[in-house]
Amino acid sequence: MKRWILILTMGLVFFAGLKIGSYASGMSEPSQGKVDRDKLRKVKSNFQLGQEAEKAGDYKKAADYFKEAAKEDPLNPEVLNLLAHAQRKIGQLEEALANYKKALDLKPRFAEAREYLGEAYLQGALGQLEILKSYGPEGKEEWEDLSKAIKAAAAKL
Image 1 (cartoon, rainbow, N blue to C red):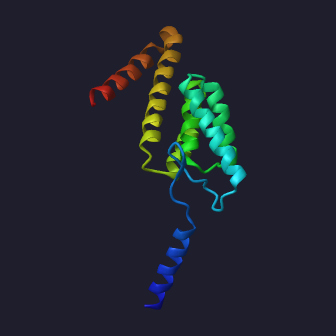
Image 2 (tube, rainbow, N blue to C red):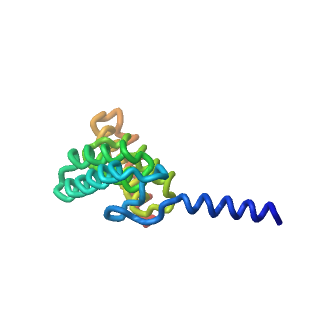
Image 3 (cartoon, helix red, strand yellow):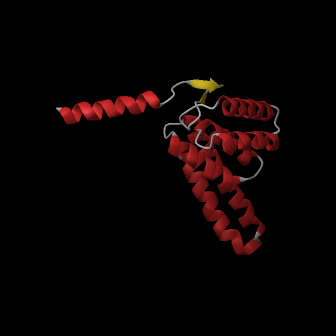
């Protein structure tokens, strides 16, 4: 009985230490426990500026803002997701994939990040098709195989 009380108490203390809620356009609280108000302002500002830049189609600027937000709050899945989105849009696919995966490690049921990760994989597959096409005849068979695989996957939808 004492063990269960101890476990329950430890759980309550742990959860009481977590900040629940959102603080900027759906962005969750900073991941590092105690909130530093200046840090919070920087993250919020960079996050919002990044969102504005994305809406304007300036993905390079958006990525820069989201990188700054991620420096201040590196374990925030919303920041990582939008950083990855901007990176993907400017062709930084490897970096984007890594950041989508980090976001999903932190928040596994993150639907938007899951969607964007799938889009990144599609972008990568289509990029590989273009590379194979540039090989000419020596890449023709592989281009056809990959093309068939993509079409077969699309047919399952």
